[in-house]
Length: 504
Image (tube, rainbow, N blue to C red; front, side, top):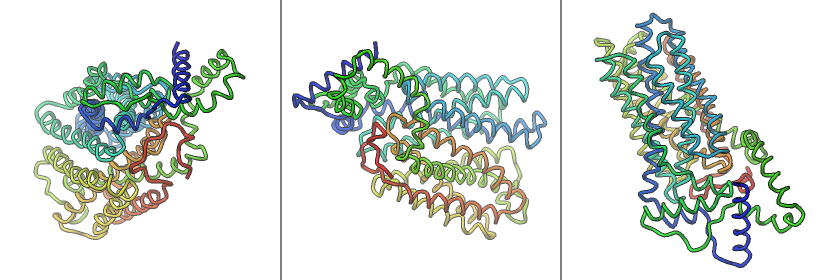
């Protein structure tokens, strides 16, 4: 039935194109309507998904130490609780990306929220260490769907507003980290870790509750030839925003490309053969989007994006963990302890809460420059500033200077990740957007997994100078990768197909 509807839509589009009737693209429609209340509702739903992910990631800073004391865990067992979450995210990012690109954003939301909320709540009732590790791995698998929420909101935003509003979207991550630190400060000092795990799963359950009102991405619908459904959503958007759609009929890159070929192929291929080909394409599409990441047009972008995300995650989580370690009094190397440990239990929550606010100036800086100077230059500037902030830590500094430098480094790390998460989905066409961004995010998680073992481990072993040099090298690679990207996406329309994507 759906194949028949697609064929009808393409036939109607062909007639309109041939008789010179007016047409408009999705980007033209979004630009005409502007950013209004409808996109605000989409932002709230997609942002809730990122709040959920941020809280489940930040919870690792509090549950590990509590369980180590409660269950007498070894250091490796404590680290495994974090490692399995990132391992689950690696698999989840790829899986949810394929599901989203081939079966729709909404269907993936339902699955992501179900897995994350269910596993998160179950982990609160874990009777032993093994069951906790398994449940937290499932939580990580659900958290791997974060890039789907990012791509989803991106596809509703007009070109001229895209950079700024994507920074606003990234602010939901910071809100989630601050809220989780506040929640842990209250819950862990009065109740226990089980309550923290249970309460932290509430945003994921909220995603399930509001799933019924979340619309499908009209851009995704257009790539599947379902322009009539996409048009209905655009009509609702225009009504809510108090604007009007352009005059004419909605068309997409996919429709135009297929209509250009239809006159020469329609007479030679009967409808039954066309339907068979579409069914075959549907079966193959599950993995084709992943392999297209390595096509001649995209392989350079893909590999550079992997380097960028690995370096960004390595530096971000490294600075977060380094700040926590130095400010909590755990570092016993010489005079490098910033705050004497008089109340270690409460200081952990206080320090994480305070350092989370270092992300706010990073978001503000990103919002100011991302649409003015572009994605590439924005990331380059903030990577360079990050190098400058970390460089003095090669030598012994006072407690105040060290704190200021680490706050500055975290500000820059937040800014680069923010712009990078905007840039990644813009680089890929709609047919593989969440797959490309999701796999890049998964590679970034590898950086997050390695960083505690390498960089923070060096600090613990009183080799802070070597650790800082390592950070500088990683940031240097990130700068090189950023400068080598084939094109800037500032002010450019999103592409729907690989054929429409610029070659390197």
